[in-house]
Length: 214
Image 1 (cartoon, rainbow, N blue to C red):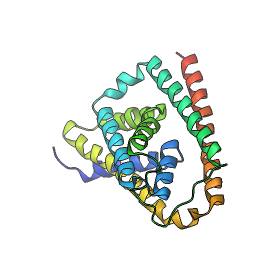
Image 2: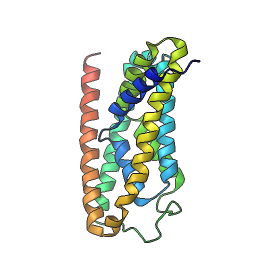
Image 3: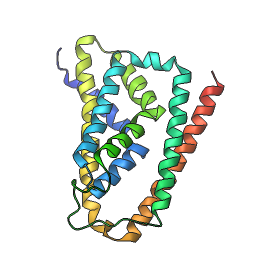
Image 4: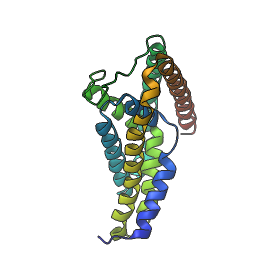
């Protein structure tokens, strides 16, 4: 392995350009940060999943996924149902909003560690765009580099995920003071519900179009 700063920077810039977007995963991380629930675990799990997917893509897994339209369709369908469920849950929360306590922190049991990790896995792995962007696109670009330079690209792209998720999760904590009012949570939960429903519709359309062309 030979560290190449130019290749590392390429992976970093590509990773940041793809990850900084409004999506289900980022919305969940933002909410976890505001609630101060398992902030480190949330950011760490998201970063780890991205690193694994990026590495898999550079190693050639993207080509296998791209050749399995049925698998992609199943993932898309499952992701659509999950987003509809989470969106409905957010809309219901509008009528029963939570309020941050003064001592709210990572030890708050409002949501268990297990349910948090499972939700992160669902948001991360039941989104076909994760595979298209992270595994196929990023992995494909990384695979073009000579083998000794690929670790530098992987580290760069993975660093983008670490910077973004930890920055988003811990940065959201600064918004905590304004979330001590129920009206603020009502607005956030309603917005989250709308985002989840919109993403679910987009996934459903993506699945239909992708299946029709196969």
